[in-house]
Length: 414
Image 1 (cartoon, helix red, strand yellow):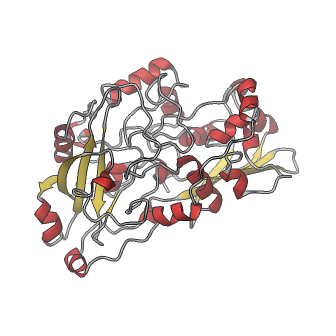
Image 2 (tube, one colour):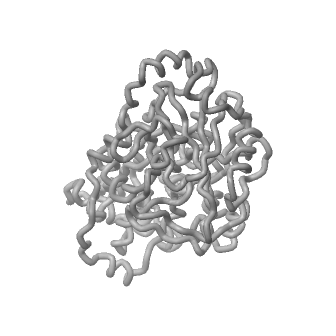
Image 3 (spheres, helix red, strand yellow):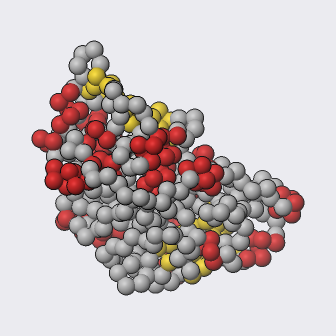
């Protein structure tokens, strides 16, 4: 998973970025959408018979939400120059690679004389946002981006079918202590789930017995630490249809491999687990009583930017959309096409400097200043289309957390 996105670049860097992009492989947006939002695979009769009132129903739309962020009558100076003398801009909200191609960040959006083009978004030259000048000479602005629930829910939160306003880590709710790094095996993660209220169950109970009438089953695996890589944990959820689903950080919920194959046995399907090579076991969890709390972290800058709108008097709103808009989907596929797929990431995972815990990462980021990455000044910048960083670790720089008003308050809860 990637840390915080890079800020505005100097004019020279922007000029270099304007060079025509070279050829690149672009996954089919239709294929990516079909795989990411595929309806649950038809369960076997045995699975249907055992489902009963099983809590977890596969409903990716509950988390795969996009919003239309709108602002009206923005003073021209604020729209064009941002705050702090232009060092920090407010538009667009999500500052992906397209922003780095322009001296004026807001030109990464479509202006009043530009035709909205999915091809321009797919090529990495534009974002799904647009602006116009109103009768007062001020600006009106719209941007399609991920909603709060998509941005701030990671694999553990999703496995419990809960939204708590930021990422979740095993043991934080039950012990009040952060999950310690590096990941040397299953024990710490298993102990954390047990402390939060989970109960270990056998493989036979999961696959051969009747499903519990209350709660559901989840599975845990870890990616052991290696060199400078701290490792990671990952959770999957067994849904009522007999298929395992998951959500990797702020990526889309899914229950298939890249090729559309449903995940039906997460323990024995090493391809589905990818780098999470050490399988740790199954748990019975009850969402209503599980001690699940957020760790005050998420990767995207969007919540703090949206909060900055309000702070500087911009009248903004975030309206959940009834479906994922084409422009946002194309942008998502362009920048995160390899993100969230655990079956052998094609471009490899980003590397980062080790921290001993989420708390230590926060301290390091604070020392590096609010412009540093999520793991401090040494955090690597993500390549477009590269696999993102781990699903939970890192820390929001203190300045950004303060700007967001604390966990869960950066955006309205959709």
